[in-house]
Length: 405
Image (cartoon, rainbow, N blue to C red):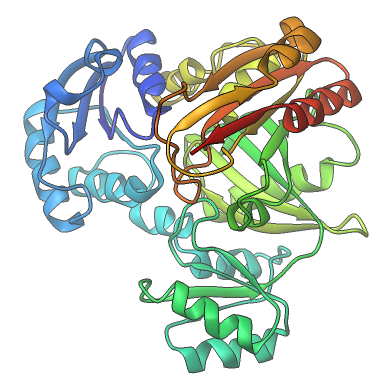
C-alpha cells in the first residue's frame, strides 16, 4: 500500500498520522514545501520518500507537480488531513483517476456557504447565511438575517477572523478587520453552548464517534486575551443531552457525501435543546483534540485512522474510560517568559489525573495568542467522573499563572 501524504509534518499532529500510516504497513510518500532535511526526524524515519514542491498554495501548479511525481510512484491513496490542502488532494485524485473524495465533495466540506446550502437543501438545521463580497452586500445580509450575526471567512479554519457582530458600527469595524478576504460568510449568530462531533468514517459510515464541548465558545476565546480556552472530550458521547448533535452529525456526513477518513464538525445546543449545525471539515481536529480522544479511550486514533484509510478497517475498541479536559494558558505581559506560578500545586492536587504538561520554559519568547490556540502552554487532564474532571480543569485554570515581561 503506497500512500502519498500531503503535508506530513504540519500541523504538528500530522507527524503522528504519518507514523500511523507507516505502522499499519503503508509506504508513505510525503509532499510539502520544506526540504526533506528540514523535516522533523519523527517524520523522516516514517517516509519512504519525499517530494518537495515550490508551493502547496499555488493549487494549479501543485497539482501538476504532484501528478507528475505520482505517475512515477503509482500510489494507492492520495491523502491530506490539513484543511487548506484537502481540495488539492481531491484534485490530484481526480487527475489520476483514483478512488476517494472528489473535488466537488471536498469543496462542500471547505466552502461554508456551499456547505450550508447543501445541508439546507437536505432539510437540516443550519444558521441563515449569505456569501458577501462587498460592504453593501454585508449590510443587506445583516438586515435580512437580523443582528446579531457571525462573520467568518468562506474557507477559513477554526475560529480565525471570526466575529460576533451586534450592530452596524460593529459590522463596519469587522469588515475592516477581514478585508484581506475576498469574500466572507455572514450568518445567523446562534445563542447556546458549542460542541464538536468528531468521527472516523469508512465509506461514509462512522466507525468511531466522539463529542467535545468548548469552554467558552471558540469565538469568545479567540477575541479575548484574558480567557484561558478549554475543551472537554466526553467519556461517553451517547447520552441524551448530546444525542441530538450526534444524530445531526450523522445526517450531515451523509448529505455531504463523506467517504473515508476523519471529520470534525462543530454544532450548537440552544437553550431549548435544539441542535444547530455550525460547520464541518473533512480532516482531523487540531487543538490537541485527537490526543484527548486517545486519552479518553486508551487507544491510538492516529494509527486507527491510518488503518481505516489504508485497509478500511478500525480494529481498536473504544474504552470510553475518561472525560478528558485540555486548557491553553496565555502569559500575562509581553516579551519573554519570566516565571510560572501554581504548577506544583496543580501537580499535587491532580496527581496521575494530569497526563500532559507542556509549558514554554522560562526565557522563551511569548507566543502571539491570536495565531495559536496552544498559546504559551497547555495541560491535559482526565478523570472518570465528569464533575471531578470539570473541577480539576477549573482549578488548573485559576491556579496556573505564566508571567512575561
